[in-house]
Amino acid sequence: MQKRTKTTTRNLVCCALLAALSVVMARVLCFATPDGVRWSADKFPLFLAGMLFGPVLGGLTGFTADFLGSIIQFGFNPLLCPPAILYGVFGGLMRHFIRKNPNLLRLGISYLLPVVLGSILYQSAMLSYFYFDGTLWAGFLYYLGTRTFQFSIMLVAEVAIIFILLKTRIFTRMGLWNPGKDETK
Image (cartoon, rainbow, N blue to C red; front, top):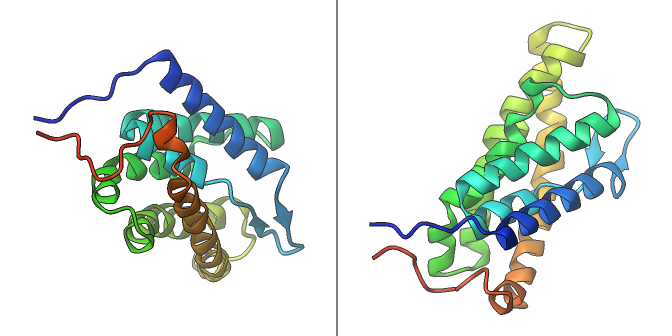
């Protein structure tokens, strides 16, 4: 039987902080190119929320960050929200895999799933549907190419950030992460 993570005030405040960090990194600390590609390291806080607090709070953190960020910038579109939710959910689903031996390979494999499924495939299809002026297939291939290049670089950077944060043991000192200990009994 799996031990359940308690939803305490501290956990909710940490998730709110991670959502706010994601919004700031996505909307303020980003680099946008003229062809519409936005480079930002805004997804790793969502993955961390899932990794630290489970898939439900991780998914809610992803939704909150995407909702607030899109309201601030251009308006909320629920069809563009699932990739942000996937980062938190996959962080929570893969946390036992990462906790056994938190190394770069395990983090990379865990982080690759939401990147490919959400940010590259799903988001490319939705962006081509909403914003591309040509055919849907041409738009999908265009966004697929640009987003694959962008997120392959950002995947390496964001996995490195998570790995460095785990190596500093900041989450262990805060009582949020116990490396090597699985919560299942």
